Every structure is written in C-alpha cells, then in structure tokens.
Length: 269
Image 1 (cartoon, rainbow, N blue to C red):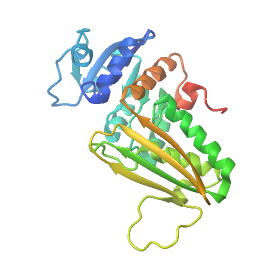
Image 2 (cartoon, helix red, strand yellow):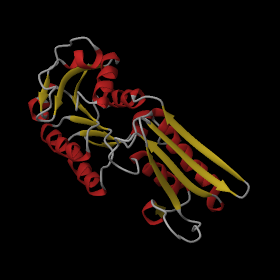
Image 3 (cartoon, helix red, strand yellow):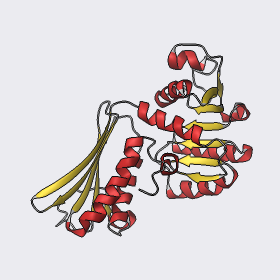
Image 4 (cartoon, helix red, strand yellow):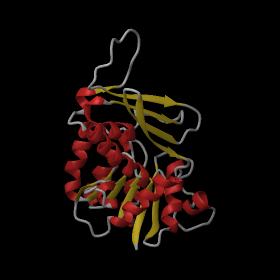
C-alpha cells in the first residue's frame, strides 16, 4: 500500500482527495498537514473529510509529516507547492502536484528538484480533460491554419490565477497542432479598438463567477461552420480521483518529472 500525505488537508480539494485516497484499494491515508495558524491543526483528518475517524491528525507544516508517507498530494498554492517540492527533494518523497499558477521559473526549478524524487505534475488531473488535450491538438492539426482558435474558460469566483492552467495547456496543445508557440501567438486580453484579428492568434478568455467548478471550450471557427470541444466539471471529485490514480501509479517509479499522459498512457495517441 502506498502511504499518502495530503497537503492542505482541510481545504475543499484536500477533503475530496482524502475521500478518493480512502476508497482507493492501493492507497492508505497516512498523514495530513495544514499551514501554520490553521484552526484545523489537531483535528482528525478522517472525521473532517468523510465523517469517520481514521487516526490521522492534521499537523502543522510538511516537515512534521514528511517521513510518514511515500507520496504527497498537493492542490494548494504555487508558492507553497514550491516549498513542499524542496522538502520532498531532500527526503526523496514522491509528489503529485495539481496546483495551478506555476510559472516557467517554478517549472524549471521543479524539474531540477525532481532529479531527487518522482513527481507527477499536470495542470489538470481529470481523465477527460487529458483526453481533451489530445483531441484539441489533433483537431488543430487536421483543420490547419484556415480555422480561428479561441478558448473560453470559466471558474468560481475564489480562483486566484487566470487564465486557468488547463486553458493555457489547451492553448499550448492547439498551438502545437498548427506548429505555433502559444508564447508568441496567445492573446489574453481584448479591449478597445483592437483592429482585425490576426489569423495566427489563439485567444484565451476568462470568466470568474459564483461556484462554477470548471468549464473549458475550445472553438475552431471557419467560414460558415465551427467545431466546439467542451469539458464541464460537475464536481471536484474527478480531479481528486485523477490525483489518487497518479499517486498509486508512482509506486516504484524512478525520480523525474511525469505527466498525466504518462499515468494514463496517452503519449502515443
């Protein structure tokens, strides 16, 4: 059994991850932690997350629990994630990272740190979203330069980063399909008299409202027709389930960076 440590165990995602870990046949909920000052420190993590005591007490900080598990599952905040990764590297503890908002500098540091531990990092842990990534690239490659590519993403009003990591990945996959780079053709804001749309642009628009869990639509629009590829999340459970799947998959894996394409066997599709 792979022993799991859950970061931000009292948060919304932390609690859903706990539920998925608790029901996974290859995983055991071994440890939990929260940031200093959390009112949940000292509580039983099982009772908090799924209404049944499991003897796992929420502790303060990763250092207090890092030796109690085999893999850390983290959906917290990018700055915290990087501090956890540095600790994981020191202890050779695997990580599953679903945190969004990681910068290019963060990812470069993470890749270097992962020389000392196995790490699955992905902007989205959902099975369906990772299939969507592949579909978007293939659709872009088939349709080519004659179709405008636009992405709209919507999330709840508490989400801190924009565009979402998923939307950016969708943009990158679409750009790869038509031999472009999102960093060169991505358009993230339109306001005022902006002039005619450039044919190579890939636009990404953001909505933040109420309790929307997550919605992403990629438009491929040509003269007189369009294709829309959409994913809608109805709960956070599919993200948490994907993370649990990744944690079990990491058992016995060598140090290095992996993605959900590795976990799900999607690289060759």
